[in-house]
Length: 301
Image (tube, rainbow, N blue to C red; front, side, top):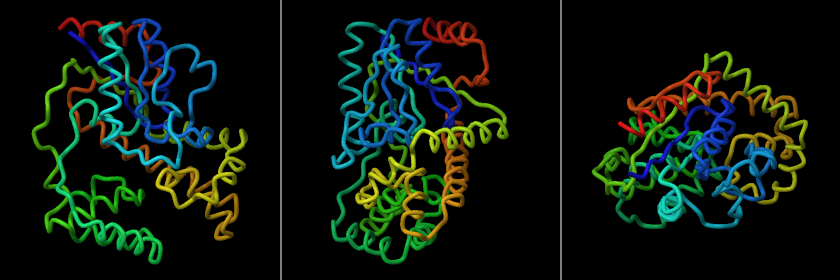
C-alpha cells in the first residue's frame, strides 16, 4: 500500500529539518506544499530551504513557478497527485511537508466543488479591496458567512475575495460547499504534527524574522515592490515592507508587524491542523527515532 507521510505544524517549528531526516530514513522524495515557496522570486521571505537542505533530499514544488503565473490550489492538487503517482512507482513511501492547510487538505482529501459565478463579482470585490482596504471585505464576509470568517485566513485578500464571490454569486454561504464527499485517494495518509509551547513558537518566529532581515529581506521586497498587486505577494513579510516603501510605516514598525502577523498566522495554522484528530503530534524536540518508530507502526497497521 502506498503511504504519504505529511508533516504539518506552525511556521518556524522545524518541519523542513524533520522532513529531510525522514526522507533519508525512508529513502524517498519530499513534496513541498507551502504555497509561498512555489515562487522563484520569493526566497528569503518564504524561508525556502537552504541549498544544503535541498541537496540532502530530492524536493518538488519549491520555486517551480513565477509570481506572474496563474497558479492556485486546484492546479497544485492535480500536479501533486500526478507527481505522487510517479514517485510511488519508485518507492511506496513518500513525504509531503508544509504549513498551508488548504493545500495539504487538497492533496489528502480533495478540493470542494464550487459553482461558477459571474466574473464581474470578483472584479467588483477587487476594486473594493483596492479602494476601501481589506477590513471592508472582512466585515462583509462576517455578515454573509460567519463560519468562513472564523475559519479562513482573513488577512489574505485572495481568500477573502474567493469566499465572498461564492457567497454573493450563489446567494449561499461559502462554508456550505465545504467538506462534501470527495474522490478517494490511492494512498494511505499518515499525518505528523510538530508543536511547542506558544512562547517557544513565538520566540522562534521572532528570531526567524530577524534572520530574514539580516539576510536581505528588505532588498528582496524592494525588488518585488513594483509587482505588489499580484496575489502571490499578498503575503506576510512582503505586505508590511510594502507599507514601509509607501512611507506609511517606519521600518522598525514594519518589522514588528511582520512578527505580529506571522505569530497570528502560526496560531491559525495550529487551529487548522488540530481539527484532524488522526494527526500524531510531537514536541518539536522529540527524538527522531521515536517519530520513526510511530510512523513505522502506523504504516504497518
